[in-house]
Length: 143
Image (cartoon, rainbow, N blue to C red):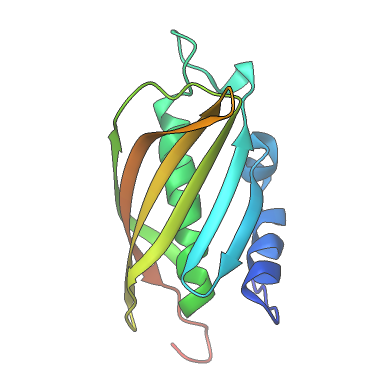
Protein backbone atom coordinates (compact mmCIF):
# COMPACT_ATOMS: atom_id res chain seq x y z
CA UNK A 1 0.00 0.00 0.00
CA UNK A 2 1.26 3.43 -0.86
CA UNK A 3 -0.24 6.44 0.88
CA UNK A 4 1.32 9.81 0.15
CA UNK A 5 0.31 13.24 1.37
CA UNK A 6 1.43 16.81 1.72
CA UNK A 7 0.84 17.06 5.49
CA UNK A 8 1.26 14.69 8.45
CA UNK A 9 -2.44 15.03 9.31
CA UNK A 10 -3.60 14.22 5.77
CA UNK A 11 -1.16 11.28 5.66
CA UNK A 12 -2.39 9.75 8.90
CA UNK A 13 -6.07 10.30 8.04
CA UNK A 14 -5.48 8.57 4.69
CA UNK A 15 -3.72 5.61 6.33
CA UNK A 16 -6.47 5.33 8.95
CA UNK A 17 -9.14 5.17 6.24
CA UNK A 18 -7.46 2.11 4.67
CA UNK A 19 -7.65 0.01 7.87
CA UNK A 20 -10.90 -1.94 8.25
CA UNK A 21 -10.08 -2.72 11.89
CA UNK A 22 -9.68 0.99 12.67
CA UNK A 23 -13.03 1.73 11.03
CA UNK A 24 -14.71 -1.05 13.05
CA UNK A 25 -13.24 0.37 16.26
CA UNK A 26 -14.26 3.90 15.34
CA UNK A 27 -10.69 5.19 15.58
CA UNK A 28 -10.41 8.83 14.55
CA UNK A 29 -7.31 10.93 13.98
CA UNK A 30 -7.41 13.98 16.27
CA UNK A 31 -4.08 15.57 15.36
CA UNK A 32 -0.79 14.80 13.66
CA UNK A 33 2.49 16.62 13.23
CA UNK A 34 5.95 15.26 12.47
CA UNK A 35 6.67 12.67 15.15
CA UNK A 36 3.45 13.17 17.15
CA UNK A 37 -0.06 11.81 16.73
CA UNK A 38 -3.26 11.76 18.76
CA UNK A 39 -6.09 9.36 17.97
CA UNK A 40 -9.38 8.72 19.74
CA UNK A 41 -11.99 6.01 19.95
CA UNK A 42 -15.49 6.15 21.42
CA UNK A 43 -16.67 3.63 23.99
CA UNK A 44 -18.94 0.84 22.71
CA UNK A 45 -20.10 -2.26 24.56
CA UNK A 46 -18.53 -4.45 21.82
CA UNK A 47 -15.02 -3.41 22.93
CA UNK A 48 -15.44 -4.39 26.58
CA UNK A 49 -14.12 -7.33 28.51
CA UNK A 50 -16.10 -9.35 31.07
CA UNK A 51 -16.06 -6.61 33.77
CA UNK A 52 -17.17 -3.86 31.41
CA UNK A 53 -13.79 -2.17 30.95
CA UNK A 54 -12.11 -1.51 27.63
CA UNK A 55 -10.53 -4.83 26.64
CA UNK A 56 -6.75 -4.93 27.12
CA UNK A 57 -6.43 -6.04 23.49
CA UNK A 58 -8.01 -2.73 22.43
CA UNK A 59 -5.77 -0.85 24.86
CA UNK A 60 -2.80 -2.41 23.04
CA UNK A 61 -4.34 -1.76 19.63
CA UNK A 62 -4.80 1.94 20.36
CA UNK A 63 -1.21 2.25 21.58
CA UNK A 64 0.16 0.29 18.62
CA UNK A 65 -1.90 2.31 16.14
CA UNK A 66 -0.98 5.72 17.55
CA UNK A 67 2.71 4.78 17.69
CA UNK A 68 2.68 3.48 14.12
CA UNK A 69 1.02 6.65 12.90
CA UNK A 70 3.54 8.84 14.75
CA UNK A 71 6.42 6.89 13.18
CA UNK A 72 4.84 7.10 9.72
CA UNK A 73 4.89 10.90 9.90
CA UNK A 74 8.69 10.74 10.16
CA UNK A 75 9.85 7.69 8.17
CA UNK A 76 6.90 6.50 6.10
CA UNK A 77 5.45 2.97 6.24
CA UNK A 78 6.30 0.86 9.31
CA UNK A 79 5.51 -2.54 10.79
CA UNK A 80 5.45 -3.41 14.47
CA UNK A 81 8.40 -5.48 15.61
CA UNK A 82 7.70 -5.32 19.33
CA UNK A 83 5.38 -3.45 21.64
CA UNK A 84 4.71 -3.40 25.36
CA UNK A 85 1.74 -2.10 27.31
CA UNK A 86 1.42 -1.13 30.95
CA UNK A 87 -2.19 -1.11 32.14
CA UNK A 88 -2.32 1.34 35.05
CA UNK A 89 -6.02 1.28 35.93
CA UNK A 90 -9.27 -0.05 34.44
CA UNK A 91 -9.99 1.72 31.15
CA UNK A 92 -13.43 3.19 31.72
CA UNK A 93 -14.82 6.20 29.92
CA UNK A 94 -16.91 7.63 27.12
CA UNK A 95 -13.89 8.12 24.85
CA UNK A 96 -10.25 7.10 24.79
CA UNK A 97 -7.30 9.18 23.57
CA UNK A 98 -3.91 7.75 22.59
CA UNK A 99 -1.08 10.29 22.34
CA UNK A 100 2.09 8.94 20.77
CA UNK A 101 5.47 10.41 19.93
CA UNK A 102 8.62 9.28 18.20
CA UNK A 103 11.41 8.88 20.73
CA UNK A 104 14.21 7.83 18.35
CA UNK A 105 13.86 7.54 14.57
CA UNK A 106 16.35 5.53 12.57
CA UNK A 107 16.94 4.23 9.06
CA UNK A 108 15.66 0.74 9.82
CA UNK A 109 13.72 1.07 13.07
CA UNK A 110 11.81 3.66 15.09
CA UNK A 111 11.25 3.71 18.85
CA UNK A 112 8.00 5.36 20.05
CA UNK A 113 6.06 5.86 23.26
CA UNK A 114 2.39 6.48 24.00
CA UNK A 115 -0.01 7.38 26.78
CA UNK A 116 -3.66 6.29 26.72
CA UNK A 117 -6.28 8.37 28.52
CA UNK A 118 -9.93 7.69 29.29
CA UNK A 119 -12.36 10.61 29.27
CA UNK A 120 -15.09 10.12 31.88
CA UNK A 121 -17.46 12.79 33.15
CA UNK A 122 -15.31 15.55 31.62
CA UNK A 123 -12.07 14.35 33.25
CA UNK A 124 -9.14 12.58 31.57
CA UNK A 125 -7.35 9.82 33.46
CA UNK A 126 -4.19 8.04 32.38
CA UNK A 127 -5.10 4.36 32.00
CA UNK A 128 -2.12 2.87 30.16
CA UNK A 129 1.30 3.57 28.71
CA UNK A 130 3.20 1.75 26.02
CA UNK A 131 6.22 1.64 23.80
CA UNK A 132 6.80 0.22 20.35
CA UNK A 133 9.74 -0.74 18.20
CA UNK A 134 8.74 -0.39 14.56
CA UNK A 135 10.54 -1.55 11.45
CA UNK A 136 10.79 0.85 8.51
CA UNK A 137 9.26 -0.74 5.41
CA UNK A 138 11.54 -0.15 2.43
CA UNK A 139 9.97 0.38 -0.97
CA UNK A 140 10.82 -2.09 -3.72
CA UNK A 141 12.87 0.55 -5.53
CA UNK A 142 14.86 1.38 -2.38
CA UNK A 143 15.18 -2.13 -0.97
